[in-house]
Length: 343
Image 1 (cartoon, rainbow, N blue to C red):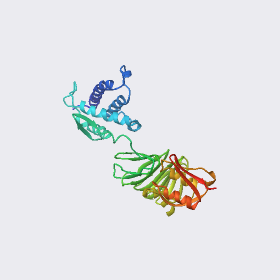
Image 2 (cartoon, helix red, strand yellow; image 1 turned 180 degrees about the horizontal axis):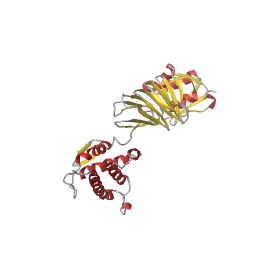
Image 3 (cartoon, helix red, strand yellow; image 1 turned 135 degrees about the horizontal axis):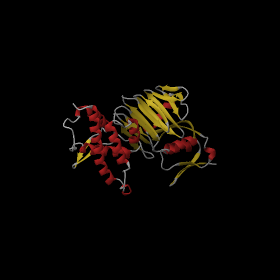
Image 4 (cartoon, rainbow, N blue to C red; image 1 turned 60 degrees about the vertical axis):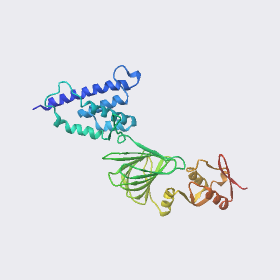
């Protein structure tokens, strides 16, 4: 019977040999300036992380932080793991007759779970899917709208000029709003961590609308619930038909009226809704959807009020409402649309 100490020493030697073979490949792949000495760069770092995971000496939280901090790290680790799998089938010198297969299986399975991904053979080369390790991204241009299916079947809808990122793993779901506005239909499963501009919330299954504004995030709960953090009160529960204005300070919670919900969700039907809005604010909102911007030439018009529901992609009805209801002149040219006083 081989002792646990012998097993450990054998495994350390085996991992060291695999790492040495990997380094031979790494030196060829890294830049010419790194030909001398210890290889550096994502591939070399990935090889060292893999050896640490194999031996059980690596800090898993530190590894996941390194892996998630840059898509290149995730890709490098995926490639190194695939290479290690191929090398593990080679004969190793001085391997004991009773190789410690059984006792090391849990560690090997753990490492495989860490590196979980589909192995795809194409033209004799083996690639380990790395999408599970890195953040995935979707975005829209000005005036564009799109829906994206997430790995668990949840749906995220992106409003104009929006960017969103997500990372879904077996035990956690993370969604980050990088720019703009989303509507999220989140399916059942582990509570999702939602973040934007430094603010965070834990979301249950449900339906949510989030918009990133300067220095704050608007989070409307239509179904389900969210838990947000108040630095003075701790965790605060936000329920359906409530809205949280998240910032670096304490969240501001309000009950969302039917009118407010109608305005916040109008974009999902291709519309913009105003309710006695300042003309300056209405123009700012409309310009989110337009490549040719609207300009108020006369600052005296900024505080005029307007209401109504208009098509976000076609502002003609909005211009007609301005001309008729506010008695202003609307002039269109190649550079944009100008709103001027008739007087």
